[in-house]
Amino acid sequence: MKTRNLLLLILCISVLLGCTENKPNTKKSNNLLLAQANGEIGEIVTVIDSVQWEGKVGKVLQNTLQKPVVALPQDESQFVLRKVNPLRVNNVLKKAKNLLYVISLDDPSKESKALRRLIAKETLNNIYNDTSKYIIVLRDQFARGQIVVFLFAKNKDLLAKKIAEKEEYIKNIFEREEQERLKKKLFVSRSKEIEETISGSHGYGIKIPYGYDLAKNLQNFVWIRQLDPKVEKNFFIYEENYSTQYQLDRISDLREEITSTYLRDGEKPKIYITQQSILPMLTDTITFKKKFALRNRGLWKISDSSGGGPYISYVFVDEKQGKLFYIEGYVYAPGEDKKNLMRELDAVLSTFTLPSE
Image (cartoon, rainbow, N blue to C red; front, side, top):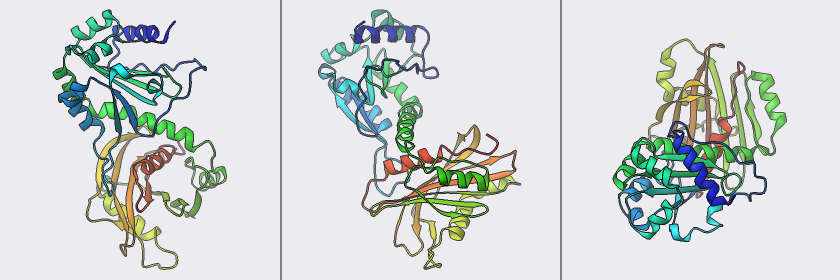
């Protein structure tokens, strides 16, 4: 069966079976003959009608996926959208790691007609009659390691509305995919000796890419780092007994206590890591390791203002142990883009496992 016909069939089945934002099609292809997907980290090849790209749909889409990443010292958009004319999609572009098709059924242009031809007539009717359906997620359709997302609606106003309403969900589809790709790349080679030392000393586990060093291993604090002439990547794990909600209400103070106690210059002990006052800690609530957690982002600096950068951290409680955990990744990379470095550290932090798991 030709690739196009196969795609039409999958799309038709997906929509008719009720594939919505809560039930994306995540079945992976077993075709080992597919080429490896290509593209830069965070790049999304976006196939959309040129007029819609310049109009309401394009503006909402760009505002959704190209927003600056929070808590970085300079503006860096979360994703880079590479706009492609639907009439000029070739085999190279179809092998992109992140491929996004944006389709409105009411546009009469040649470009939009070309997009609609990707979808079977029966499926088009289903989209038109059921406005709850707006997204399909497919994997490995044209290349291995690929994610293909279709965003669609019966008219451009409804499409723009759906994109705006589901902003976080749409972003998270691509962000999760990037993190999984990063993990595969990062952990091809691991620092098993350090992992075993940490597990043996503390009970919890974390995957550590090759090239990191164990800087400190204390009773309730572990610091791992990778030093490079241009970039310094660090993450640390802190634990303390948990007894009251008040501990979760003072995370900014807790971080200051941790860094001022444990992250001091060995040769100049008066110098330590602290919070930059220009940006307060930004906190949101998430689920981390199936537990309620606080995710925190901000900017750190050396207390003598000789350097600084971004950080991301997670705080959660393990009720079985009665322990509060604070885990953080931070980077020092003057003059360098930091978005993908922070993605890497976040991917490492996501591998943390508790003794009870």
